[in-house]
Every structure is written in C-alpha cells, then in structure tokens.
Length: 338
Ligand code: MN
Image (cartoon, rainbow, N blue to C red):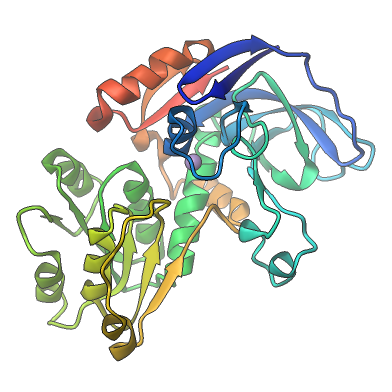
C-alpha cells in the first residue's frame, strides 16, 4: 500500500509500505477513503511543529471503511463507515482519570506522535472509531475531526445561547467555530487583518466583522455590547496581540479561550485578569466530541461542504501542498481522495 510520509522537514515521499493487519484484539483495520489536510500537517511538513517527530505518516482528519476487526471488537463491524478520532490517551494517568484525556500526560496523536491517516490502510484502537451513516459522503466524514476541534473550543469557552462571542481571526478554523457557535444560538463578532476573510466571515453569518489592523477591536466590541464586553472571546488568530485584544474585549467574569501553539508574548497584565476575574482557558484537540459532531452532521445542522475548496488524489500530495502555499487565501479545506 502507499503511504504519505514526511521523512524530515520539507521532504515528503509516497512510499510503498506493507499493508497492516489487525494484531491486537481491540484493533480495527480501516481502508482510508478521504482525508483532510490541516494546518498542523503543513507545520509538520515544514518543520515548525513543536510536538511532531520524524519520520511521520501525517494526517489526522480521515474516514474510511472497516475491513478487519480484532476478536474483542464489538462497536463496529466489517463494512461500517467510520470517522477516526486521532486522540490516543493512556486512560490511566491522573489527567485521564479526571476526564481530560485529550491532554493526557502520555498523549499520542495519530499523524503527529505516531503514524496517521495519509495512507491506504491504517489500524486504530476500537475506541477511536466512530460509525457514521453509510449515506454520508466520504469527504464530509473526513471533516468531522476539525469540527470536533471547534466543538471543544466552544465547550471550553462555555458558549451558551444568547452569548456574544468574539472570534479573533477569520481563517478556516475560525469559520468552523462560528458555525458551531450558531448551532448553540450564540452570535459572533469576527476580526481579521485580511479584508477577503472578513467578507467570507460575513457570508458565513458573522453578526459583525472588523479589520483589526485599521480599527480598535476592544472599542468595537464594547460599542456592540453596551460598553460591557463580550461573554466569550476566542483567540483563533494566535498572534500574541490577538490574545490581548480578546482579554480586553471580554466582560467581567468572561472567558477567554486560547488555541495557539506559538510562543509569542501576549502582554496581558495580571490586573486585566484579576480585576475582572477572567477565566483564561486553553483548548486542544477534542474531548469526546465525536458523537455530538456526527449527530450535528447527520441532522444537517453543520454543513462542512462550505469549507471544502479543493480535492486532490492522495498521490498528488505535493500539488495539494503547493496549492496551500501559493493561494492560501482561496484555499480552505483540501480533501485528499483515496
Ligand atoms: Mn486538524
């Protein structure tokens, strides 16, 4: 079988690997049908990921068909269509035991710490596969994972019906967060420094948009909230200054959610946090969000087709990466077809 492997930063190859077989009782062998390219795949390729190791078969957003199951597997059977949760945790560390397995002390993410889904066949633990309707197109099933990330963000933010949410940044991940906020009945203010992204955020239903390069985000948010500030602020721009804007835009007792992996400094004072008793919370991957997101997909509440802009045959991975590099503003989710 063929596998897309990053050998070391900036060197990617399609290699011929032995087709894996189920080796453990709790394993499932999946024939991969579609996979999405994520910004973190690109950062592993470029050598800027702070967590990846090499060589690595990348890909953590994927779906496929079950072709073999271990003796103890009961939740899925051969022929089932499944989406795969890339979060692998130990289940026994203190963090897992308090129910926060997405930040397990021994966390392994498929496609990051261990080989992922950009290959024709992959074995994964039964607990990581989630059946989807056989009617769901493969390209949509492969988009479940990025929406679990968005669901985790709004869950960490405690977003509720009637909330006003500031989303700093209007890239592809920000748009998925916007869509999930809408399901929950919250309205969103979105910022960016690129005008085309703001136009698209409006098309996706953002209540208000602002170019934060030209205008003051904090004053804008306050003007829309009777001077109080928004209920939740999500930093999806992750550039340091955006975290400061988020913290200053949120109301007293509000929640700020951080998503970045960068080490840029945010210049938030203790006074900003203490005087208004802010909750500043990180979010990472997803914690048991697959069932909820699959339900939203199957009920038609989430429409992932709006973020899919390109398809490539998986063997054309280099062309797909070139597309992302050369036209980032018109490229949202690229689906690799297997
Ligand atoms: Mn991703």
